[in-house]
Length: 231
Ligand code: ATP
Image (cartoon, rainbow, N blue to C red; front, side, top):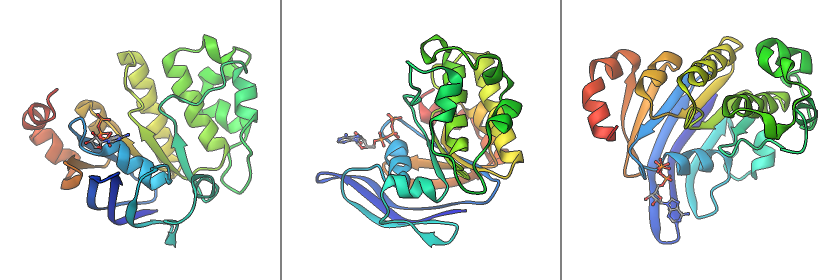
């Protein structure tokens, strides 16, 4: 689904990503883990075309080279950016927020599909964006991306700052997305959560991928990883 080859990125003269290569298969959930400043957000933003500095390397989505496309054209081809500020319009209610994205193509979810997968959003369809909890905003942000027909979701720490209950709900949503054949690349510092939703994990350090781990490897090395991540 997604193939990144030799990706490097700079902020001015400072190099933040160094020759990063990774893949995410169809229906696969993959996490990026690493200490603060390791380059996780820069990597995700570069894949979406949002990094403003210099970028080298290639990004392919379903075998198409999208390296030179601007973010909105990457979105049209199926890349979904689940915004960290959650991108919810506070003045609109849930349903208005869901109607707003331009939905097209065979993969765009209908409102009915959204409410089936996220019953909580159905219950709150008339609530304004300002009245939503953090978890509900996160659900709405994901649902909006699915309304646009995304097949590959990019999520920057979707569980950050959420209560354990909401983290569980976000986990259920990611698993649901996966069951529907969507692919997900997410930044996640919670190792338990990461192994509960994902298939594989890339460990980043100083802008490089230093290891690729499966769930069994992460569990076997949990203490070492927590210590390394400074958690
Ligand atoms: P965090 O979890 O703290 O967000 P991260 O792994 O996502 O960390 P990035 O935010 O991608 O890391 O940062 C990678 C490197 O790029 C760091 O050295 C950081 O200081 C630098 N960097 C990030 N944003 C900028 C910026 N706007 N201008 C200059 N340097 C930046």
